[in-house]
Image (cartoon, rainbow over all chains, first blue to last red; front, side, top):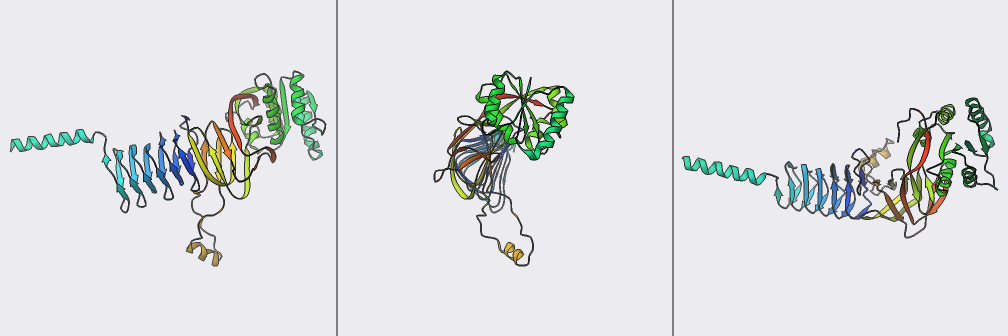
Length: 131
Length: 251
C-alpha cells in the first residue's frame, strides 16, 4: 500500500466498521468490507464485499463486486458483478460477468471492442455488396 | 567483546546458570550484568556501548530485547554495535526470527556471529521494538488513522502494530443480531456458526498516525506502557544488526 511494490507481501483489508477517505493503493489484493470515499487501485485483485460501499473509481487486474460502487471500474483481466452487487458508473474490461440479480447502471467499454465493431461492420458491408 | 544483560528473576536462575556454562564452554563468556532499581536495562545497555563492547546480548524475554533495542538505537549504536539474543521462550517470535530453538543454539549463533541488518518499528519520538505494539480496550473505541494519502475513521478493540509496518485492527464486538439459525443452535446447545470476520482490518505503510479522540489509550510493548495515543509510528530501515542462526532464512 502507498508505494509498496512488494507483490508477495501482505494484502490490505478494510473492515466493515472502517470509513476511509483518500487514495488506497496496494500492489497486492485489496478486500473492502467498509466504506471508502476515494480511489482504489491494485496491481492484483480488488474484492468489494456485500457490506462495502465505495464512492470513487476502482482499477485493478481483476475486480469482484458484491457491494455498492458509485464510480468507474477498470479491470484489466476480469470484472464480475455478483447477485448482491450494485454498480453505478462506467466499466472497462475485456471480460465482463454480470450475475442474475446484480444492478449495473452505466456504460460498458471493452478494450479493442471498437476495432472489432468496425471490422464486423466492414464484413457486413462486403457481404451486402457481394449480394 | 560480549556484554550480557540478564533479567533479574530468581525463578530463571538455573536456566541462566546453564546459559553461562554454555557460553563459557564455547569460549564467549563476557561481562554479565543484571538490571536493578538503580540501573535499568536501558542504562546498562548504554553503559555497555560506552565501554566499547561490540556485542550487547539480551538474555531473557522479549521485554528485555525491546528495551535494549531502544537503548542501542537511541545511543546511535545500531550501526557499530551488534545485538545478540538468547531468548528464554523458544516459541517466541524473536526466537523464530533469529532461527534458534533452544539456548544452546542461541549461544552457538553468538559464536558463529552471522549478522543480519533488520528494520525496526519506532513509536515517535524514541521507543523502538522488534516484536509488536498493542493498543487494546475492553469496549469498542473510535479512532482516526492517517497514512500517506489516507484518513480513516475506525472502531476497534485491539490495534496491533507489527514489524513491516503492518497494522491489524480488530473489533471483537459482534455488530449484527444473532441469526435465527444461531439462536436455534444456542437453544439446542449446538455450536453456533461463525461467519467470515468482516470487522478486522489490515493495513501496511511506511508510517501511521493513530488518534483516539475521546480518550488517551496506552500503547504497550510486551505489557510495558511505552506511549499513549495519539502516536506516530514509522519504520527505521536497516536500523540494527542482529546475530542470527547460521542457517537463518527468515526475515
